[in-house]
Image 1 (cartoon, rainbow, N blue to C red):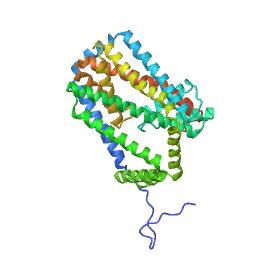
Image 2: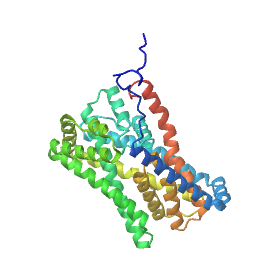
Image 3: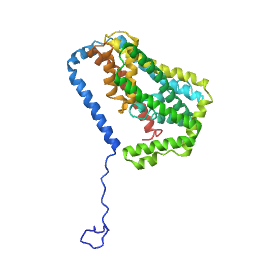
Image 4: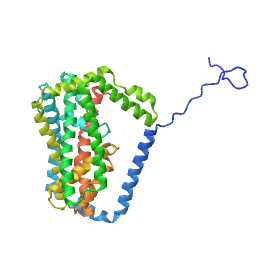
Length: 362
């Protein structure tokens, strides 16, 4: 039975509960506005350089197939190395994971990290799925994944430092690179603070993360989000336990560092190959600088996969070091194919299969 609705004509009637329209959070508006700004900047860049399109197309059409094969082989090798990277980290955490056992899971994890902005943590779902399948300890898998994330950040920081030295020596260090490097440094320092806090005291970690959550909620005006994101004492203790696992096996972390530096090496080789493929020289220093700048802006950018940020920063870096506009645009397209789109095309089906099997939650 449906009760009649109360109106103002009914004395003493309570005011009806009208459905409230949920207003978008400030953070959502900022994200949309930021994406719009990046899109507008990319469109302006494309329109302003439309005269280079015929040259870029010719560079793509006549690209050297041998160098493209080098780029493709390097991409495959990088995915294999990524799997070995995770396997080495799991062995450092006390597991007996074979060297090539995690290539599929790591490729899926890479896909999840490419399509989200999670600070590299989204891929943990794929490694957890593999752990369930092979009955590996959750704490050890979590420790290994954390080791991969931290080691990856530190090796890139070293690569970026070398890049900034090269740019400064050549007079090519500009405000944009300095600002992006400063943002990256702040993020790294913040993670160091959290790691040290967890190392010393789970309670201290909880206080830091709680304060961070409240600050984020205040900025976005999402108070309920702050409550939901507060870590429990058990979670803080688990994180501290993860770090203790890593701390107890420092020498076994050396192979992990080797694979981490290989990640950077493969990225530089991919960029070197695509620049050579479009006929714009064979400079390792240019490839190193352009690679580091593109990764830096992918990290500080707020769109998944560094969309927009990588294309603009990489094109600017190549042009700054003497690559003509048309071939630079062609090299960027080829690089994004081997660095983003092909790994995503390989990792996507693997992730979908894990999701359909129920090992990764939808």
